[in-house]
Amino acid sequence: WPTGHIDRLFNVDANQEVDLVEGSTTDGQIDVDPDVELTIVSNQNIDSGKEILSVFPNPATNSITFQSNNLRYDRYVILNEAGSIVLSGPITGKNQEILTQNFAQGFYHLVIYNQKGDKLISKFMKS
Image (cartoon, rainbow, N blue to C red):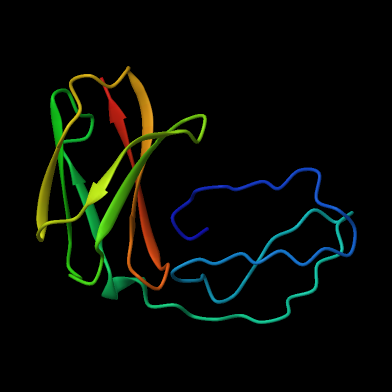
């Protein structure tokens, strides 16, 4: 990815369609292993600058505050590394504080949703 992050997909079944989405591209170039046959069905340029989800402080100790520049999101879910829901609730404003003092140390995903099912995801660490 342009961010330098490397994603690897393992155990992908043959003839399976996999959608990979990134907010921006590096001239549409994708480097693949020479043993892999890759067919690009579509290359969509998504402007990820329109919606931002910020989580701070990161790492967190007693609480996190999250904010989105888009007020259409109405609920949040926090998932632990195993994918289990740790906490969920309604979004009540542009800035929302969530107490994390009872969370175990580790990494968590904050997911915010709207009524259509659109979501934004941010990762944070509890220290």
